[in-house]
Image 1: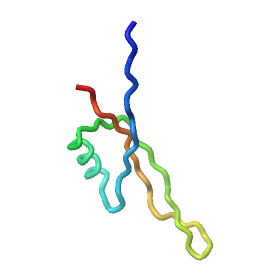
Image 2 (image 1 turned 90 degrees about the horizontal axis):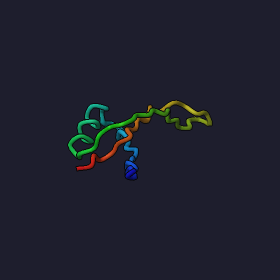
Image 3 (image 1 turned 180 degrees about the vertical axis):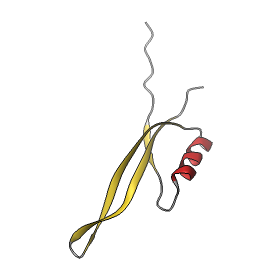
Image 4 (image 1 turned 135 degrees about the vertical axis):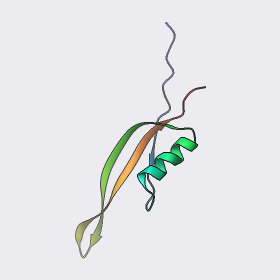
Length: 66
């Protein structure tokens, strides 16, 4: 039985000020295939309190084998 090659997966974040659609399009133009997505809240400290700042969105991507 032949060994399967492990996919080279990586996480790429949606940049601040960039829309999810624009990021997805950028990844497709670069040749990546999106295989996953995750979101995490980002907080900043204001006057000693943690305040929600934005939602960090990342796509898990792979380069398809030719």
